[in-house]
Figure 1 (cartoon, rainbow, N blue to C red):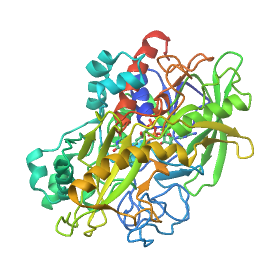
Figure 2: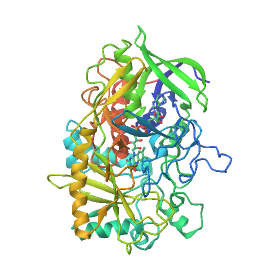
Figure 3: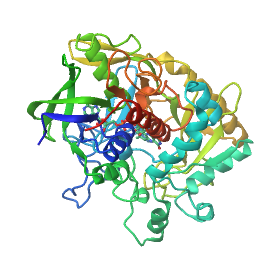
Figure 4: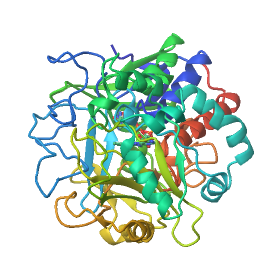
Length: 503
Ligand code: FDA
């Protein structure tokens, strides 16, 4: 049961939240974590915790009547999506008109659904986006700490060259090399030794059974197996699931009271509860944490919150695209759900791009090469409070996504030219070649040094902190979770040392 009071409370259970809870627990601080999603540890009727990506059921998505997969169509056929029963599933797609944002729901947040790519940005780019953060400390201390805590591992490069699972990546690499571009292996939190055994047929398949965006039944070191397991192991941390924080109220003595809505997995509200705390950490992700503070400011609950709350949001320049492969360049029907290679053209002076070579794990030959390009898009969105729905709305217009397309097009036009190939026009529900209407990498909203001080302390309020991707100003140049983790490590170390956080 939920206590009335806990010295520390962490909202959410994603990367920033998990790091924070572990370090609080190690410091002996009793900490309650509140997560709106479920704990994913019980098998369904098919004997699996997570559902099949090719035959999704209600476990796939967060309260939808039909799945909303990133690849909307194949040969313009509506084969990717399926009707499902509304349920507290693991992947949410939050639709804001001009932009849709994919986020994980459950104990572990995005780590349950993501592609496991654990990439550090180039140091020069990190210094550009967060100039006030000591890069020596980040690269010398906090990135290594994050990588260790996350269980990051590297692919056996000899195996990569011969395995079936990454033939798709080798085909894309060949096309990149023909263009004079360099590719780079990406570290991962998916256990590559397990994947080897999957291909050898000695263990149950997960990444090789098309599992990725709706959860992995094996092989992935998601946060529930790393940071959160360690946090629970301190004996000072507890997690309450299906508890959504709605309001943050400050009491005259400076403590915070949270209004928390408890539901069941079918969406029925069971209770509205109150939990008070002295130290409150927001780790609900870019959308979740920003919404809580935008609502608190604009309803007058926390009126001293700054104008910077809700600003500086970006898509990490995400744009997805496919290329049509020549008939002889087959990828095979087996594609590992976890990417292992990226095209690194980030040093390009006009259009920096880091393009991950993504699988199309359809279980059949598709003659397609898919990419998620991360580009340097300077456009930023912001959130406004909508009283009618009591929610924060993202303000982002389709034209703000154009710089992402321009950059990706510049790179992939070169690749197509060098290889005499063309784009795929059948993947996104209409005939567009570039899909920039969604992002996997929402960043910002409560930017470090603007809505907070340089360590995530919210401006205007004591003992109120932001720990997650909302601190990052819209772009990391690579997949973001290692940076979110490392920044959270840095900030919580300082806060525990300086702010007198204790039981
Ligand atoms: P995160 O979003 O992880 O966690 C927030 C948690 O808070 C969620 O569990 C949510 O349910 C909960 N919450 C929200 N509001 C709440 C409320 N009011 N009350 C209670 N709980 C609340 N990144 C990367 O580096 N490599 C990769 O390969 C990929 N691939 C990828 C694929 C897909 C499909 C997605 C959707 C995302 C990725 N990402 C990725 C992105 C990565 O997963 C993402 O950047 C991080 O999960 C963000 O971490 P945070 O700590 O910010 O929050």
